[in-house]
Amino acid sequence: MPISSQSVVVLSILLLGSALFSRRTYAACSFRAIFNFGDSNSDTGVSGPPSRQHGPFGITFFKRPTGRASDGRLVIDFLAQTIGLPFLSPYLQSIGSSFKHGANFATLASTVLPPNTSLFISGISPFYLGVQLNQMKELRDKVLHMSSQANLPSHEIFRQALYTIDIGQNDFTSNLASIGIGGAVPSSSG
Image (cartoon, rainbow, N blue to C red; front, side, top):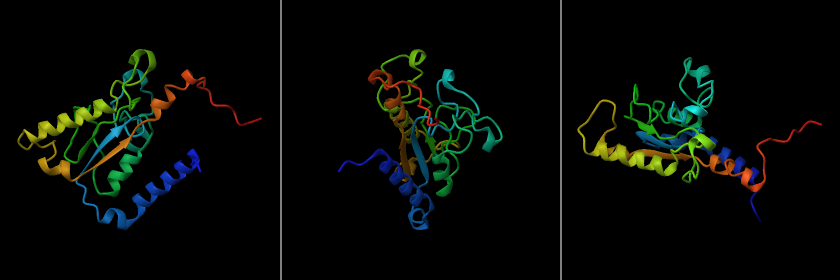
């Protein structure tokens, strides 16, 4: 019997909720860092293409613009807070970032697959998942070959980290027109 998309969403929410709020689940965890890959659902700063950025940039919760595509905290923020880590710094934000407890490689409008069009035509970010994974490899290689620095993680942190991926919606939505589905959502009133 096929599983409906609603069932998958409900199951995902239940699993995430139980993971975040069950003391047994995170009490035994000893993650010292989080490395996140994704799109606007987990982009924690000014990481996306400037042409796609619109307010409110997280101003309601943080009381200052943070460059987010949301107006508050994201699932990745709650996850970090739950396991006792600070909010993740965006990897592409060079000023004021600390990667001691991980990094966030997520960027607004990212996809899993390489974009087959220009940022200026489609608005899709050039920082697709493969690029984000290469950024992680570059960070790890630099950390492993450098002496300790104040804003970088320790050498062993990569084996003691939680790795999360929250990406894929832009792969689907960017191709809807090609299969005959327009961008408008039908009204339920009537």
